Image (cartoon, rainbow, N blue to C red; front, side, top):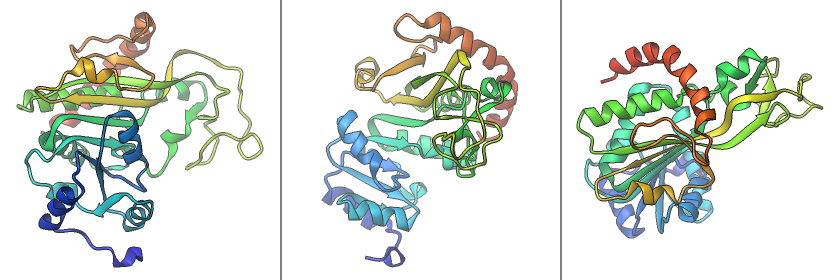
Length: 282
């Protein structure tokens, strides 16, 4: 099937797909389907359905034997449809913060148990910048929405205060300890790169040891009433908690002081700017 022949499903066709697939989870922005496999391996998913607005990516997911369709998230009915929703490396591609908030609200509205989000870790951008460095994910044209953990926290807090019955926590994964890591580039590297390669990219000082927390990934777990948040945390891969479900800033495995040193200096500089921006989205 050519991608040109794929058409957006209507609401009846979408609900029929969920029923026929016996879907227990949805993957928002499924791309070629890798996060469907992730949800089955790590989140207890059985049968997932992916939705995307890119016909070429949906076609590739279908060719891999996955249930995927062209469908607009905004057209999903506001009713409990699946056990959970995953948004894996999706929201950073959404340029409109109004849409980001609506997508998270929609995911929570249709999920019975939880919502899981993962994206690049953008909190360390100012720290790396001050050292003449950047992560390659922070300099992609396809990543217009570089949300920090603070921005996530404020957005979720506002949704909760508006009546969404959620519990949430924020976590970091894949810590980077020095500039030798290929995820780290010099500022002079071109836009839209992947792992650093000395043969392809400008010279980089690989001897810099990081004394603040730098990670590759930010994870967010949102649970709905009846779902044990603490129990769900056990299913997360090797993560370190940044902000727990009680709103406390900490990091697991006895690293709370290190996390506090990293997060606290960033909260005040970001807070006024982000609070005003997100207030306009309400």
